Length: 640
Image (cartoon, rainbow, N blue to C red; front, side):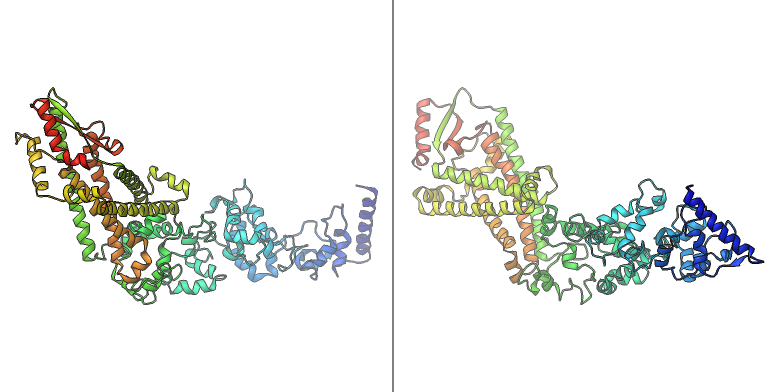
C-alpha cells in the first residue's frame, strides 16, 4: 500500500473514530456520502464504489441502505447480508423465481444467470432504454452470449440448441439484427426475460402451443391469417400434430424464403410439407389423403422441381402458405371455384375448365375415363408388342446360328438402299431421336447418375431447352422427309410402290416364324423392303405424329389450359411418356437386331453410311443363273 493510500485509510478511520467517540451509540447513516467516505476510496480494504457512476445509474437516487439494510449505522458489520432485489422488484422477482434461471440459482447452480448477470452490477445498472445497458435491445444477443456463447460451457448441454448464439447469427433475424435493424427478433422476444422457460414447459413462450402467439407479437398479420387456416384451427382445438410456425420455418434455422438453405424456400417447401403429409402416423390418425408427394412428383411440376427448376409450382404455390384450407372450403385456393385463378398465376388465361381434371392422383380422386383407358391401353400394348418383337427376333437369331452364313453356295448381293439425301435424313433423325430420348428421360429419372451433365449445364432450364430445340429440329426433319417423299421422283416411287402396306406384310411374319420354329421347310422370300422395314417405317411415322401433337400440348401449356380441361395435358403427358418408352424399347429390340445383331448383316448394316444394302443368300443354282435372278429381282431398286 502506498503512502497516500495509507494516509487516506487513516483519515477514514479517524472520521469513523470521531463519530464513535462523539456519540454514545453507533452513528446512523444519513446519506450516501457517509458510505462513500470509505467505499468511495480505491485501494482500501473496503469494496470500492464509483460515486459518479453510481449517481448516473438507475439506482443513483436511491440510498445505499435501501439495498444494504444491515448497514444503516456506522460502523456496520464487516460481513453484510446479500442484497435482495426482490425487496423493490417484487413482481419481477416472483416471475424470475419460477423461471429456469431462477430455479437453477435456487438449486445452487453458480453458472445460472442471476439479476446482475443480465442487468449488470447494481452500482452501475442502467435503464433498459439506455444504449449502454446490457439489457438494451441492441445488446441482448451479446448479453445472452456471455453464458450461452461459450464453447466450453456445460450450460447448453440441456438445451435443444447446443450452439444457440452461433445458429441465431445465421438466421434471418440474426442477419437483420447485425445489419442494424433493431426491430428484428432478439433472444428475449422469443424466449422471454424474467419468465424464461424451456420449451417443454406449457408456460414457455417457445412451447408449441405458444409459438403462434409468440411469433405473432411481430408478425401480427401472419398470425391472423394462420388462425383462420386449417393448421391454425386444428392447433386451437388442441391437435398437437398440427404445424406451427417453427415446424415449417425452423427455430434457430429460420432463414429468408429467398435463401436456398431455408426450409420454406421454393426448392425445399415440398420436402417440408411432406414431413407431415407423408407421415404414416399422421395420415392414418387424421384420415389424410395418402401418396400426395408421389402424385405430385409424377407430374411435370414434381419432375422439374427434382431437376432444380424453382419456377414450377410447389405445394405452397397452389395451397398457399399461412392460409392453407381444405379444398371443400370456398375460401381455399384449390377449391373448384378458385382453381382457375390459382393456376392462372403461372398459366395466363387458364379457365374454369381446369376444374374438370385432377391435380393429385390419389385413390380418393378417380381418373377421367380417357386417362384410365390409355393407361391400360399402353400397359397392355407395350408388353405385348415388345414380347412379340423379342420372340420373333430371338427365333430368327437361333435359326441363323444353327444354319450359319455364308455357306459354300452363298451369294452376296449389293444394291443401293439409301442415297445421299436419305442418309442425311437418317443421320439427323438418329441424332435427334437419341437427344430427345436422353433429355426426356432425364426429367423422369432426374436422380440417376447419367443425368448429371444437365446439372453442370444449368439444371432443368438446360434440359428443357435442349429437349425443346431438338424437338423443333425433329419436326423440321419430318417436314423435310414429307417434302422429299411427295415432290421427288425417288420419294414418290418409295411412297407408292415400296412403302405402302400390303397384305403380304401380315402373312410373311407368320411364315418366317413358322420357318424359324422348324414348322415350315422353305424360308419365305422377303423382298426389300419387307414387312420388317415397312413396319418400322410406319411405326416411326405414326409415333412421331403422336409425339409432336402431345409435345405441342405440353409446350404450349398456357394455350392448352385456356381451351381444354385439365385432364388433356395430363393425358398428353401420359401418352407422350408411354410412346417414348415404346419407341426406345422398339429401337433396342427391333431396329438394333435387324441392323446390327442379325447374323446376315453382323457386325453392322453399313447402308446408313455407304448407302448400299448387302444381303447373303443361300442357293443351289449355278452362279450365272444366280446373277440373272439378282439383276431381275433388284432391277427396280438399282434404278432408285
